[in-house]
Every structure is written in structure tokens, then in C-alpha cells.
Image (cartoon, rainbow, N blue to C red; front, side, top):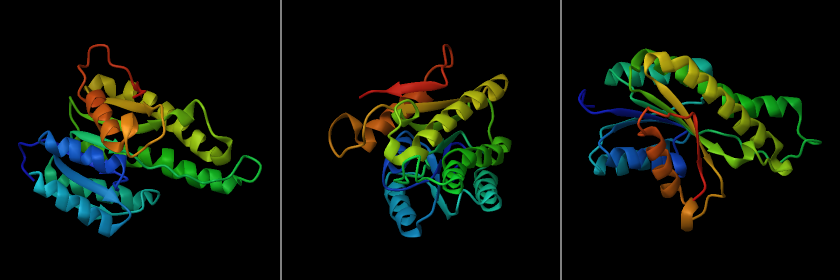
Length: 220
């Protein structure tokens, strides 16, 4: 990776929004580091990004395993010497309502959709400087949860709240955080395709810091 090119680390990299985010930033001149769970998907995405001119690194890791996730992000940072953008995408979709969802299942899902953000931010912080940005794929489930997948709303409300705290904590250092609340269902066509959501995330991350808000709604 070039020391002169900005670097984005995409956590929870896969074929959906996270892949579109990686491609959007690569097209804008970023090198890309991918952290995900499926080697084949990561390799396919990495090949696409290289064809777009980006240098790419990828690692398979379970982000709920703190030791493994911290080590992976640290390796990216040590290799590139910088992390300019950290994008966090993971969440768990478990089709259980509040009367069938167990406490253990809820905590497992929150560990993925909320707790893992703490892990990767803390690992990335040493490689981030003023102008650095943290972005999260948010969801309207934070405000309008579907009871059939009760843990998702808890995750999205929790991760948005955590982003607010991260933004306040990091603001004095010139690093900002934002949750982009996707107020619609992802689709293959129309306003809520992964590519359109990625455009919204790009716009949120690259805003001028004057008037910064730690949540940006995307309504299509």
C-alpha cells in the first residue's frame, strides 16, 4: 500500500453495503483493508478493488473475538502506517421476537453489532490522526424495530448511541464518527441499493467538519 494514499478499513466486509463502501472509497483513491468472515468473498472483493487501482489487504477474523480482531486491525495499521477511515458494518439478524429471544442470544448479537465496534476502534486509534473518520451502517430499526427480529433494533440503537459517545470523545483530536441511518429496506433497484447507501456513507464521511453531526439519515 502507498503511504501517500488514504486507507479505509472495512469491518464486516461482504457482498452488500460493505462491499459497495469498499468500492466507492477505492474509486475515490483509497487503498482498502478488508476484515470479514468468508475467505472466498474477501478474495473476490479484493480482486475487484485491485482492478480499480487500489492496493488491498484482507484478513478473515471473528470480530467478536477481541484478541483476533484487535490483532487484525493492528496488522493493517502497522502495514499501512495509517488508517484514515474505519467503516463498521456488522450486525446479527436473528428472527426471534422478545418472548422467544434468550438473554444469551441477545448478548451474543449485541457483542457483534455493538461491542465489536469498541474493539476495532480501540485497535485503530493508534493509527488515526486529525481528519480521521469512523462510519457505521445504521438502520431505521434503531427507531422502528421489528419485533420479529428484536435483537436487531437493540443492536442498531446501541451502536448509534456508541457512535455519539465516540464522536464526542474523539472530536478534540480531530477525529469524527458518524452513523448513517438507512431509513429503508435494502433492494436491488431504486434508492436503497447497496451502491446508493455507499454513496450516502461517502457523503457523510467527507462532509466539512463545520456543523458535523454524529448521525446522518439516508431516506433515499
